[in-house]
Image (cartoon, rainbow, N blue to C red):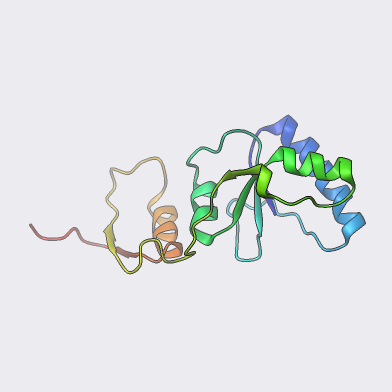
Length: 135
C-alpha cells in the first residue's frame, strides 16, 4: 500500500504497517509519488483531497483507507477488514472512467504538469490530445 502526507501520522502509520508486514510477511509499503499497478491500498492521514495520488488511486480502483485502519490493525496484530475505514470509494470500473473520451490539456491547468495530467487521463482510460477541438 501507499501512504499520503501528514508527516506525524504518516510516520506512526508507516511504523505500524512495517511491523504488521513483518508479522504477516505479505505486505510491501510504497512511498512513491503515485500508486502503481502493484498498490492495493492508499492510506490517507486526513480527509482525502483531490491530489494527484488520490486521483490515480481512484482511477486504478485502489482502496483508499484511513490511517486508523493501519493503527487498529496494528492493535489487533493482523490486517482488519477495510470496509469500516474506507475514506473514498475507488472506481467500480478501474481504467475505464473516461472510456476513450478525448481530452485537450491546455497550459492553463497549472495545478499539475501537462505530463501528470496526460498520465492521469491515460490511467482513467481517456485519450489526451495535443490540439483543442475546432469550434
